[in-house]
Image 1 (tube, rainbow, N blue to C red):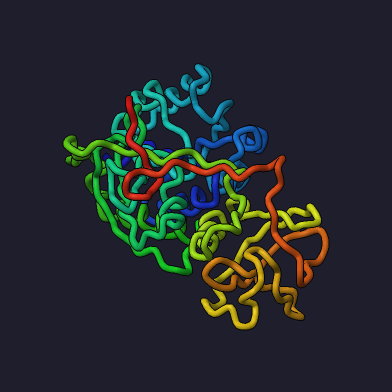
Image 2: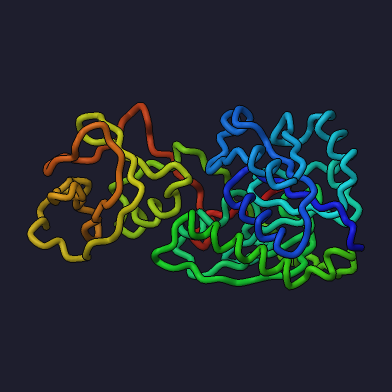
Length: 334
């Protein structure tokens, strides 16, 4: 069927990327997105208002009333579009069954983890993979059902997680993977003649928990490897990691690297102390296991040698439970 009505659901930069890539070999009839107000209410990281851009390119835009699409008016409006095939990218919510039932072929999105599905369902698996120090990521194009990342898999691609990867580059890789898998399976997708691979029923699913901005606080009593991974895992456009100086000032750290495992002549300094500030403004922090070089940060005033990072009682660091392997995906009792 060459006259399928195709829609994309999303509200981020990678949503625009997907639409631009899809247009190279097919039409995109509809964009379902949200307004800046709904994005702010739902704390959507990397939100991009795509309405004007999409309309200029000839795509019809529907701005939903809610991010969950549980509003009956949203469901009616989407049903009236008579969508055949939908792709979801940059829409971090489930699609309700009432919406899925209106698609003649179905809706497809991406999800994966370092262990592959059904392990690692849930929230922010790419961010969690950096935090866990994983080296590779299995990502899947799967057909949406009303469950949490539980749909049948159409195809899978595995990519590398480098020591230089951030949350941003991981999403770039995942978006490229999505386009690659759509292209590879396009003839089957557009006709609806495909076979899905069920997720392995004998493996009990695990789920990553939701992360909030308050979870981005750096604990300078942790080892340097964990600190560096946290900074990469929540780097822009995901808000950045933060910490407090002993003068009470909050600093957002967007990029930092492990400078060296050698403490040079700072061996006697406490963890969390700024031991050197370079003329460029970059600075070194003594950490457990080495020195951290902070390249890019935001603060009201300058950071000086001798400053120390502390924890404030009014903003305690919140941790997450770990499973028996030391990772953060947990089995559900449901």
